[in-house]
View 1 (cartoon, rainbow, N blue to C red):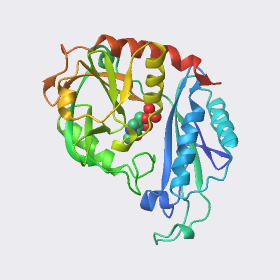
View 2: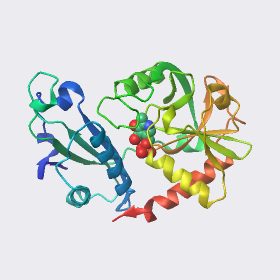
View 3: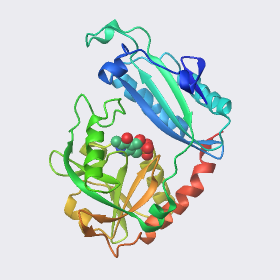
View 4: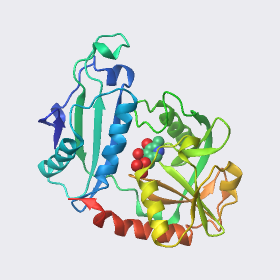
Length: 287
Ligand code: PLP
């Protein structure tokens, strides 16, 4: 495997960053996780737009145009000769001194890792998953706005640990007002009486690319989807609940905080959207 580092290809085992990189010292940087399906990169431009917006928001100037970055990603995939892959694109502030001050940093590091996809077991899609809500709260939009996909993922890691402690695969974060925000690494949808609901961005969630793809599919297939705040109670009494994300794709949730969702099996709308999403990923990509 070859890792792209500021224009050079370095062997995976030899790819390193400095301990003085502010990405390491302070989590000062941003990232994206992108999937390649059968040689097609799913919504690469949308991922890059989110990356450049995150960079702009934290005053990090990516030293490439978006077109050059797109080409670097495509070239990295060709170099690694993978038809199905997971791409991790990381931009750090670069090497600086031990102070917080980013003006001490030299050049940003642009890193593209192309790896094999670790598929979730099929059983999870067939049977759905159990999740819990946890005490860790999603911060309200602030300097560290949840829309910025920054290298500061400690909040999400705490949520993941709380899920592990509860013996389930994923957990939901509420925001400070108690509205449901998102999972540690995925967005949430609920279905009630045939209508889909997903929290609006201002509740404290990432603008998921998969979330948007699902909303597009809903439009195409005549489902109404509303971006509206909802509470834990709404999740407990929903007919269907599912999570969306680059890694998870579309995963049904069948139990929340010990309450069974619907009849405890993945629901028909969830199954339909998963099927349509799987059809979309190869045709709706960049070659
Ligand atoms: N929410 C968070 C916090 C995430 O890290 C991710 C993963 O990227 C998502 C949601 C899902 O977004 P996407 O569908 O773009 O992968």
